[in-house]
Amino acid sequence: MSDTNMQSGHGPAVQMPAVPGNLSKSDAYHEAARGIIPGGVNSNVRLGGWPLCFESARGPILVDLDGNEYVDYALGMGPAILGHAPSDLIAAVQASLSSGQLFAGQHRSELDLARLLQRYIPSAELVRIGMTGSEMVQAALRVARAFTGKNGFIKFEGQYHGWFDNVLVNLTGTPGNGVVPLPVRLQTKGQAEAGTADTHILPWNDLDVVERYLADRGDQVAALITEPVMCNTGVIPPRPGYLEGLRSVCDKHKVVFIFDEVITGFRLGLGGAQGKFGVTPDLSTFAKAFGGGFPLAALAGRREIMSLFASGEVNHSGTYNSNLVSIVAGIATLEQLAANDGEVYRRIDGNGIALIEGMREIAQRRSVNLQVSGYGAVFHTYFADDLEIVDYASHWRADATRQAAFVDALLPLGIRPTRRGTWFVSGAHGSSEIDRTLSAVDEVLRNGLN
Ligand SMILES: Cc1ncc(COP(=O)(O)O)c(C=O)c1O
Image (cartoon, rainbow, N blue to C red):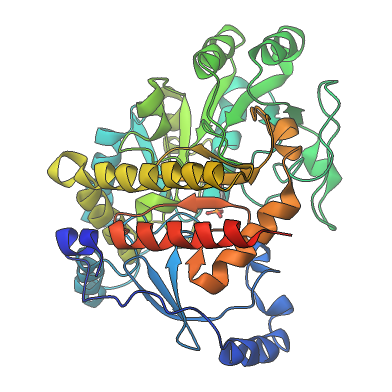
């Protein structure tokens, strides 16, 4: 059992991971699944990599069909901030199950959750609840168009805002050459090119570019959407003053300023990135961590913009919005995150920083160009010499082959970061997982990557 499991009471003892060896049951599963589910997966993000099929998870540990155990830093791609199957969250959800699923109408816990969101999120004068980050982004863009009477929006190269046509652009491949707006790069066959007609793509973290662009085209731009910390291409902090600068240039040109906090929300702290950096957007989107692993999302923002939903002028709908289980999960997660003055965040940060510093020390000792960027709660590992990573173009110059080899070498040692090299830390990780992870990193770097 990890130290943190004992502190927070996350279920029974978890054995430390055995070194994965046999994957025959996972292999057999995938063979069968590929015959009926395209690619054997239900999200394209899961195509490729080790064909694992999981049996269960508890605390920081995932168990596959063959009984192999992994220290999990993917956490469902971020949501499981309290770890897997945390006892208080599961108990709250179980208690709600006998009260029904969804009512096509209201129930009191919606208001309880909305009040919590309003309390913690600086920009949340009003909130709407949904199910996924992708749809909340679309609601944000729609209401911004209605509010401003303009159609275009600025989206930054390398940032991910969901899988819908208008935002699924410029996420892979050769970076733009600096001429703005950057040419649209569609990301999937079947994507409607016409759907990107209002998408203006700029490089991130360069305020001058945005100021010049809006001085020229501000009359066409309804919204500017940004991940406040770029978490879908590396984990890249905003330059000092960048978010503040975006705030004021958006004000100047009457552009709705949107933070996509689907990853940073309730991960970088109760106030998300807006709380951390002290910059308040007009609208912000939340998902992942605030549902603790259950499907839950929210759009929060200024009263005068969000009120357009109240009058019915702007449509935001969803059969499953505010279903009982998701709402109860959200409330229980926020209660856990806020308990003891945010104690879980101090633990996550401490353990994440121990990992970051430990990896840097190993890299230096082994003379390997492994770099780590980001924060205790979410960070990124990459391989590069003397490279200042500030945006998609600079991130693209890092050695992606070594990054993939690093992740692939860690997995058989029972350590599972995300494929792209982003590591999420939960309140269930503790010192024994940190020690095990660092010794695996040391072993991988000692053995060499190529
Ligand atoms: C910043 C950001 N926005 C939006 C989304 C889309 O959220 P969902 O997968 O819940 O639709 C993601 C998903 O990873 C994300 O990271």
